[in-house]
Image (cartoon, rainbow, N blue to C red):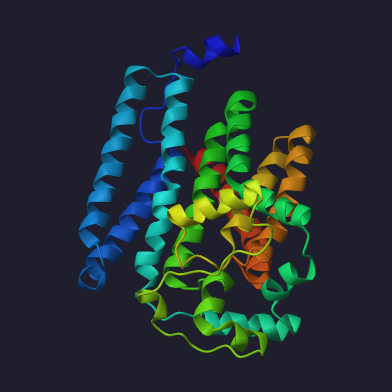
Length: 321
């Protein structure tokens, strides 16, 4: 019966854009305006504009397919497209935040003031164990599988809530991306190398100014370099990581949103299966030096705020619809 419903023509298909597609369109327009205003200062503004044109064209094409064959399967494709494009949107935040002065020296100083040390520096040195290392990288690698698991769970098991879930996840992502555009913090894996490890160890945090305009080198990640998940993260970073998007931690933030959605689904097996991966991921962001500890705290706080705001907006908007 579920297989039949997947391709069953819907009696009342959604005629316009999905709410999550409107979120993407809103972010697209906002960043397009920023592109126009900063056109001469950007490295590849033409590519950024044409990239948006391709996204609009692809979104329109999938909308047309859905209108011709309005079923759950074609609707799923519409949502999956926007989720798959998040990587492209993420890498682009680096092009924008290069316009602003780097702030890592301030955030590293805040970290030192709060904790009396640099947790990202000491954590991997304190626990030098290959099994623990693999658990950390497993947790970090669980990020996208966790998102996919919760999204597909709602699609197959809570279909009435599927569009709300897609809206909350995509809405949270783009709220983080807006922060990343205007708040250029690269995180320890980039800043420690730029500032010099001796300076960091001695509690000295120099302002690297426009260093990241021409440099994107990062520290060699700590831990067991022969581990499977270690190599997975190294490959992922080589493919798409940029010196951007450290504060707040979107890994922790989106992971928290996903866990709140898992709890909302009222499926205890789903929640408790994901829980250990979520806990590992929160620790891993500091262990692999992708984030300062304050990024993690900010990720928790911002996630709860974004989740409440987005859920409330959905409820209010549908009530007035």
